[in-house]
Length: 134
Image (cartoon, rainbow, N blue to C red; front, side, top):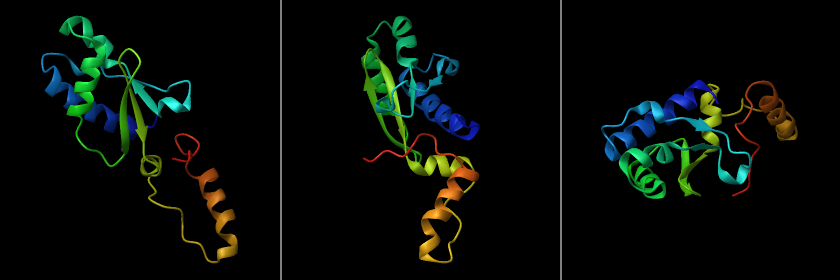
């Protein structure tokens, strides 16, 4: 995970955590990559860590965190899954923004479009995950 994406997600979750459980420290926010791509780009288990101290179900806490999440240009959607994981799906713009480019460089001819795009992605910035059709 790039430092830029990590700091952005941490800020979003810290803001949501301040609304749901203001007395809890923001240090419980941590992100992991799910083993399967179907579970999003990243996941957060903060709701399960809060369940014991708040004496509520982790799924309920996760739903409140998702509802309290401020809007973001990088986050496509958030889902509550399983016992209280929050799955985070990022937009493709997040990977481009994290490496400092907003789009591939300009191309001169249509015949070189596919080759130039392939070279750009392979040499300058790797996407977070392989592209998925949605």
